[in-house]
Amino acid sequence: MRREKKLQKCSVDGTKYDYYKEKLKEKEFVIRRIRGILYYNQALKKEPEITQHVIKTARQAGMAMAGEECRIKTKKSYFKKIRRKSGIRENSYVVKDILRYTYTASSEELVEKFLKVIELNSNSGYNTVEIKNYWLDGQNPYNGINTIVRSPDGLVFELQYHTPESFEIKNGKMHELYEKQRPVKDVSSNEYIELGDQMFELSDSMEIPKGIEKVRTHE
Image 1 (tube, rainbow, N blue to C red):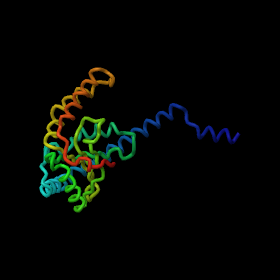
Image 2: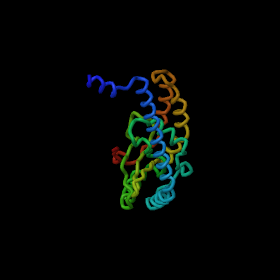
Image 3: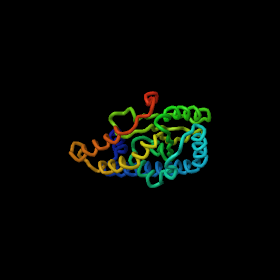
Image 4: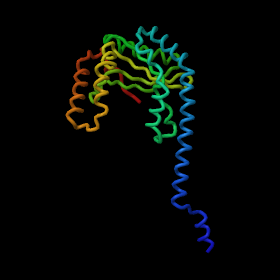
């Protein structure tokens, strides 16, 4: 008899369970959003200091900068991204490209100057923690070197390396084709495949940077 009463007290009917489950989801969403706002504001606060460092390092390495006007991800775009990541892990509000910068150099000098930047950043406490060399990725038409850098304060930001040609194509014709292909749901359709072929044709037409095989991908 006692056991039955104890079980009755511990049991929760389906309606109450669903109710509390939804409340928990709401609470988790609010917590993530608050953390997201704090993290985004922290990035904005540190932006002038990081931007100054990025500009100084570009000058020391002999790199040009491009797309500086787009260095800060908008708050709207940021929250769209964390909504897509919502529920994957607790720190889904940590978006690595709230701040993003681009260096450019000729195909002859890109790799040499890339390695110089890595050294200069490291000496200043800015550690490159991720490298993706898309020039060697035959499955992706995008060409460039994308890196994630951690500042001495622990804030991460994106730093891309391009040739003037790859930067122009990425933000021009390649972007136009990508935006046309993205809404196409059927990846086996003629339209999707044709757009992909056009992107790879653009990719294949670019001059490959000298010594690009020295840049190893690591995450």
